[in-house]
Structures are given as C-alpha cells and as structure tokens.
Image (cartoon, rainbow, N blue to C red; front, top):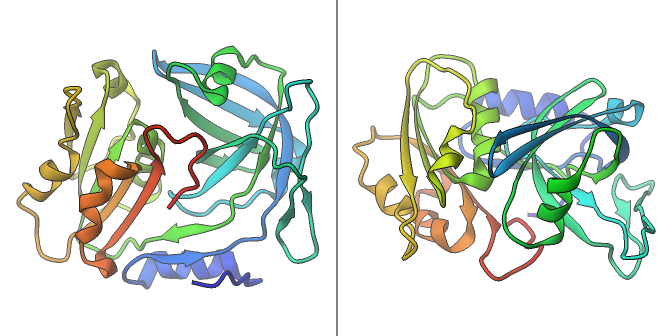
Length: 268
C-alpha cells in the first residue's frame, strides 16, 4: 500500500476504530524527539519501563496499539546522528544509517512517552536499556503510522510473545468495554508473565512458556473454540506467528516484531 499522509489522520484513525472493519494502515507525519528519562521501573527481571518527558514530545503522534518508534543510538564514539524532519512529513536520515531499534509505544500523553523494553543477553538496545538512568537523553523517531484495527468486533484474540505484550496491554487499556478477549502470551521465562496487564471484564489470559524446542503460540490459538468473526492481533517473533498469517485478512493484523538471528528487523 502506498504511503499517504492525511491532515486529518487522527480523526480518520478514530473513525475507523469506532466504525470500521478489518485492519487499515494509517500514516502520520513522522517526527523526531529528544527527551530525558524521568523514571525507570523494572516491571519484571526481563522488562524495563522507561518514561521520557520533554517539550519535544508535545508534538508526538500515537493513536493505536501497534504504533512504534525507533530509538536512535549514538555511534561508538558517542556522536548522535539524529535524522531531520523534511517538508514531506518524513525524515531524512544520515548516511551511513545510525543504529536503531524498534519499540512499541506503551503510552503517550502530552509531553510524556512510556516505552517498555524487553531485556535479553547481548545486543546494543538491551545492554543500553539495562544501564539507562534517570536524566539520560533519548532520541526517538516516529511513529511512522501503523495498522489500526477497530473496536467493533465482538471477540478478539491477542497472540503475542514478550515483545508484543506492550501492544496488547495498550489495546486492553484503550479499547472500550463490551468485547470479550483471549490474550495468548508465550514467553521464554515464567517471570515474564509478571508483566502488568490492565484489568478488563471479559478477558481470558492463556500463559505459555517455550520449551526450548519450538513455539506453541499459533497451535494454541488455532485450538481455541472461538466465535465466528473473531479478530486476531498477533505480534512477536516472525516465524512463530507465521502460521497465523493464514487467518482471514479482513479479520487480522499479524506483524513480525523480530526474527531470531536478525538484528534490527524492520517490522513486517
């Protein structure tokens, strides 16, 4: 789908969420913001929450659970090569492209942005997140827009791994009451199931732990006794959720957030 920026994007996203069917991709003007960490919270031994607050974030756009930003990391010598906003509502990036990693927007309001970051062994982003302290400046680019799915279905399945939990939590928080929901969450370590989820009437949570051999996420979803017209949101490791791409296109939003052995995967 071609990328089109509409001046009324916020209203169009909200209208689709209220009355639409299926997932529709919306584009926003892409911004770049730098703001300090004002709070750090360890949600689980493998997930840290960083709260950023600053004037530049007052122009930040985020309207849906699947929105994400790129954290822009400095070069090895400490130089931060920040992209620049152009007149077309996109960003001009320096070359060579700086190191970035994608993270879901857990929450945004006014001048405050909340990001929940999965911690794992190795990797520039994870090592940075382990050491990030209050007062440290963080540069984020985006969101570029994303796939909005409506609140009009009677039942939803949210199928995620740890990286998809922030998006699932945001959807549970933002969606109006009335619909029933299955959340199927698969993680590598049981402690990751301590991630805080909003309370919601009609929510059933199924917690899975990988056995080191393969993923049971898709099989578990297909084994649920679901009502006709159920909408599926799936986000996580690209190969684990690949079987779920067979779900009806007008009733699903399936996005690979990362891929084993691939650093810095672009979300697909």
